[in-house]
Length: 239
Image 1 (cartoon, rainbow, N blue to C red):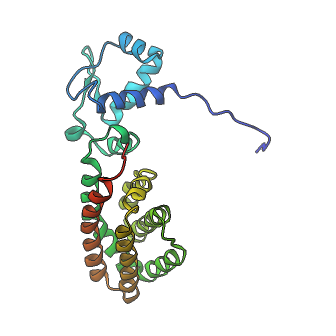
Image 2 (image 1 turned 60 degrees about the vertical axis):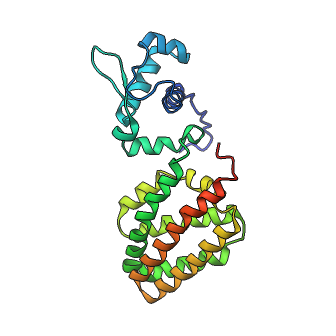
Image 3 (image 1 turned 90 degrees about the vertical axis):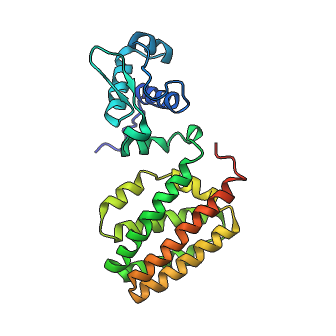
């Protein structure tokens, strides 16, 4: 391999076109079940070539944002009833136009899933869970950024140790977004105290190999986190 090669990142007009169309869908410019303008007009509006637009539309259709109908105008799907995990992964890249209910609803889902993969991690890999939590606690600083990063590392490792890779794949879709929102959440000293106690309690449950206790501990803190998020978000600029 030639280490002297210096690749220049290519411009990504299709990706930019996708981003602009998603924002237009989310902000209501192109609402659910409306039809997009004709291809020529839409390309002119976006300032791109028609081949670039076609590439972007094909990718959006594959991800569930739009429905390309032969001989008809392209329909905007109702992503909240017709979307899929690909839509979910894209949503977190457009937080400025997300509905205010999105993060609380995401926390509700995490509240349902986290106790399951955490208890599974303790059931299958209790010693690894206890050791990993010990390491994280030793390095944890009392700052929002440190807690946000630690919480991401912990939940990611717990999904891996659960031995069900679907949990990890789902969590990976929120990389970046997870820590950004967590820094808001952990701006509250109360949130940091709650999670620190959760880490300690989880370490003790894992040291005992008590998966049932791990489930109960996780369920309690996940439900409490929804209330704490409301408090943290009320004083934050989420845009």
